[in-house]
Length: 272
Image (cartoon, rainbow, N blue to C red; front, side, top):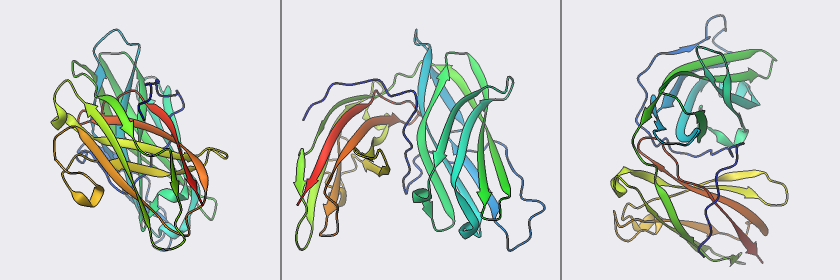
């Protein structure tokens, strides 16, 4: 199905996934690990990427920019969710964005968050990305990473179309593989596109159910046939334990400079 683009809502949906899709940031980072014994929760690292964000150099008053943040812990079982990430102006202290991170993002000893910053038009902004986590004991830990945002002439990618079945049947046995396809372009060429990202929510409860990443890598494992043709694909397997429900899908493209396309909102229903 082909859907009409809509601007991404101001309150950006959380995007939690098992991959980090930007180069590791090399800017300064600090954590308050001191004062906690070895059997307590410790933030070992906090990485935000990219460490330089490109603001749209046009008439738009705001820029929507993709980023990734990964925190690695020691004794992560002592974490108390939700965690919080917020983005602030180092000079003024203004908070531009805040995000709540749920337990679904925890993978062994690390938490990865992918999302969109909404930043004002400016020539240069010194940002601080802050992670605040709490322990089951009630104490708090904080880590932060400096990030630079500056104006750029890079143009954002465009999500042209998404195609997938409106409904899919949950099998009694085995697996029902469902393909998701998207067509995307970028003024700088498809090599500038990192991927197409689909944030998934249960419609009735608005609970976040995860993120599907569609890739144009020519790998049959994710359903892609030809690398670099601008068609991005992913395959989801429904099993007998899948739950019938209607999902809301928010699909967007992110390029290698961290810029995001508009978002397409659509629905997908699983049936018995």
